[in-house]
Image 1 (cartoon, rainbow, N blue to C red):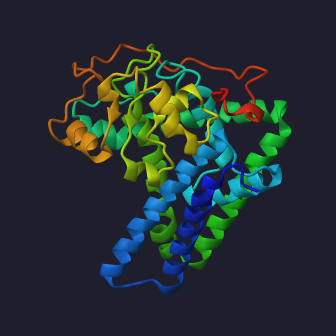
Image 2 (tube, helix red, strand yellow; image 1 turned 30 degrees about the vertical axis):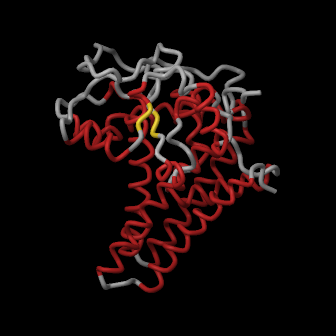
Length: 313
C-alpha cells in the first residue's frame, strides 16, 4: 500500500506519538524522572508529525487516495492543525515565492536586534499573515475545488471534536499531554523555515536555502535537512533527497550552506556569537519592505497538484 517502503518509519513515528499520549493520559506519571522525559518525547514526536505533514502534502505516502485522506486526519491529530491547511502558506506561497513579499513565511519579517529573539519569536511574526492568507485560500477553494475543501473541513471537524472531548475528559491532562506538544510542533516546523532561509540568497540557483546534513537529525526528521533539493524537486520523496542533494546541489552550493550540525548552527547563530549574518558571513542588512503582496491562486494552482515540481529522471 505504501508508495515507498521508507514510510514505514513515518507510520511508526505516528504510532509512537499516539502511544505516548495514551500512556501518559492513562497513568499520569507523577515521578518527574519519568514524567519529564515522556513529556519531552511527546513534544518531539508531535514535531515529527508536523514534519510528516510537510512530506505528505508534497508526496502522499499511500497509493490509495482514501488511505491518504484518512492518514491526513491522523497527522492532523499529531501536530494540532488540519493537514490540508498546510498547502497555501507552504506549497503555494513559500515554495513559489521564496523570501519575497508574496512569501507569507519570509524570514525578513523577524526584525529583533538580538538574534535569539528572532529565532524564538519568528512564529509570532508570521502567524497573522499565514492565517489571513489561509482564509483567502479556503474561500477560493470553496468555490473552485469542493472535494479539497470538504477534506480540509473533515480534518478540522475531527480535530476540533477530538480536542473538545479530551478537554471534557480532563482539561489539565489535555493541556500537558496534548496542547503543549502541539504548540511545540507548530513552533518547531515554522521556526525551521527561519533556520533554512535566513541570510540566504533567494535569487541564487543554489544558495537560496541552508541544509543540515547530519545523519542523526535527518534520520529523525525524514531527511528534511536537505532543503535545497526539496525546493528544486518538491515532489521528490524524502528517502531520495540525500542522493539527489549529493549529485545536484553539493557540487555547486556555498560550503557554509551545508551545515554538518543543527545544534552547532543554532548555538553559533543565536547564542555565541549570536550575530545575524548572510550565508557568506557578512552582516545581514534587512531590506525596507512593505506589507505582503497579494497572491491569488490561479486556475492551475490547486491542491490536486501540490508537489509543485517534477522529480528528477
